[in-house]
Length: 219
Image (cartoon, rainbow, N blue to C red; front, side, top):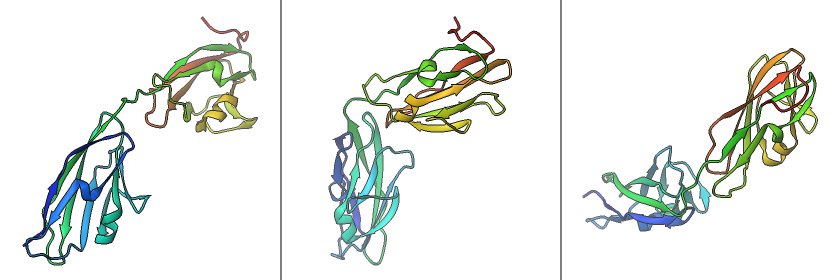
């Protein structure tokens, strides 16, 4: 007879781990030793599998020994993730069986980005922190920002005095030192930014920089 698997649904705090053996109960009517287990979770799940304390792929086959150390680490609060398993007794694979893990705790809110337009003289350096302000309703620190400006813009980004790409991801520290250098060609350039708090990206927001002005904040 093929192995039989029973799934056990559970709730965990965000980031809490549960043994795979607690999520799935496996029996074999013939008393055969289970040789392999096939673990699966969706590609979009925010949680992950760990085997022997190391994060592994969302879909993998493990030995009986590895299964004993396999854990699921719960993802973002407010999500329910469907996990699947089938077992192999050396002769046949059992059916796929599902177990649901619901992550509890405070639901993360994505950061918010507010933008301020600016008029500047050609070559004027404008601190990125003057163009964009970042807030997070959960009080999470901003880990990264992603900046973008159109190809062909006459202005450019600088970080710690070095020119960087038109599209670049920065750490929070780099964000504090980044500047936009206004272009030499008169006109308005759109600068875009989104922020990441370790769990979610904000929506994009844009600031306009008008080259050839007097350096005052635009109304």
